[in-house]
View 1 (cartoon, rainbow, N blue to C red):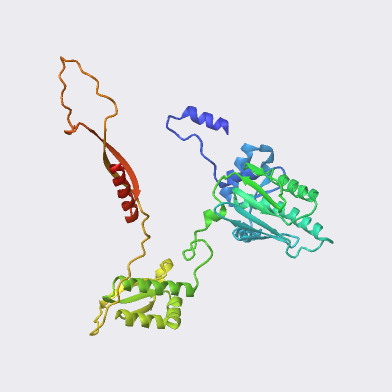
View 2 (cartoon, one colour):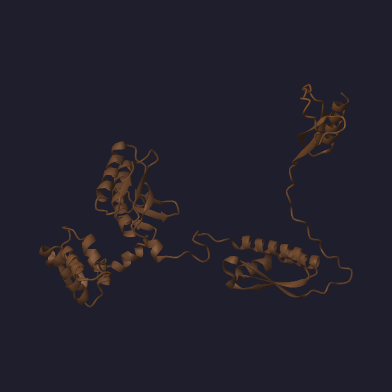
Length: 388
């Protein structure tokens, strides 16, 4: 491989492509093949020739391992690969002993829960927990590679009383993580049966590359109930009419919400119609999506004689805290120091800003709270100070 890159570099004129990442077949042979594999079956003549040539170049003595697949049944269907690929997208993985693990990917971490299920072959609870945890440790190491799970991973093993059993589970997991190409850091099982580990992110996980968020719940897995959405629609109608009640309105909402409003909130709608003098029409429309409702204006409403339109209540505004007021006061201050004699040849010049009495004015700032009592108290103190 290096000789090909070197010869191509010497023979080409820059800029030129000298090497690129191989196809899926080449990368699979390079990354996954080891001495424990006895046979590599390749479907298709072109794919078989490509894998054969690459194996001859990489390991000539193992070229005979690559064999063509010539059955009429597709290779994935023949070996049950399609069913395994579908199970990769499911959160639950069943163990051979009857237990199972649940894998949940969140924004912060990957949570893996181990459950014993129907695994009751052992005589004691401790032995059952140990056997299930050892099997789960092997499966977790396999699922991390299959699903390309990365980041912080927390595994909740079944609680075990003896510390040596916890050490056995830790050793089993580390042994099966040795063949992983990603960089992994593994902690120890805590007092609560939790093991923390981190795995290097090589590429996007299976869920990220094959799935998209649900348009209804936004990926949360929960949607609002019909009663909750109906209550939100009723409040939106009232708020809309308080702002503008000159026209009839039409409310479009999903069919389930529309039926709930008409069956359980009809009295409230009638009250709104009498209160604002308009007609409210509810229409079923499943295209509103996550918005839940849409309100449209209709024709102008003809108000009956003597109708008093409902007043719009002002929005709640938090009261402002009293601010500090800066008051600038001027105070006459007598000169403290005696006037120094000046030379005769330099006549004294009158200063700008001095009054007839020859006193300097000093400006002083004082903070006080807004309010009548503080203001009166401050004026009284100021008057006493001037009299003194």
